[in-house]
Length: 116
Length: 113
Image 1 (cartoon, one colour):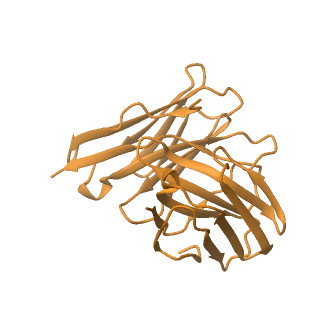
Image 2 (cartoon, rainbow over the protein chains, first blue to last red; image 1 turned 45 degrees about the vertical axis):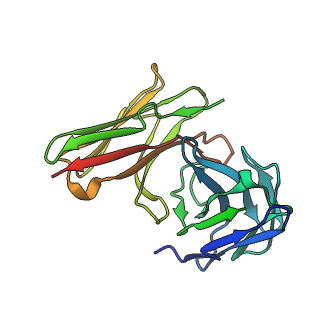
């Protein structure tokens, strides 16, 4: 257990509504990530953070924004949800102690989001 | 452009036999590779990794082989057990300054008892 929680775990919403997913960690890890998992696409990086207020885009960032005002929390916001954003969303953390890209990532349990 | 590819979406193996999962990559900058295992309704968990300075890394029943010239890696599970039934993702990164990881599309392994 890497001390990662995601909330909510399930959410059903309607097209056009804003949605915020929360990732919370208790390990003080520097790096936090948001991925989405879709059939045939695997895990795709949406955004990641390398410190408080420091974020960068991943492969599929359009339609998503993130914020990290505290080390322990990384929020993913869908400003206006669309049906194409129906997916399972995973948060991950990494300590960032080793060489770049060599840290083990620990994943949260996931949030299943359905946009009707 | 899929930089990390797992061309077999699924694989079935008899219990006790070897499972071989394959992964190909296109970006020659990648120099660190990881395998993750994922059960339904859970997040992926780290399995094993390999640096490009090696061509093999072993951990118990799991061995990862890296062929840099072919830009190919494989995960061998010997002997396969029913509890190994899961989706396996390979991931790649380059250690020259980024902490981003690119994942493949996953292979669903089913180990038959």
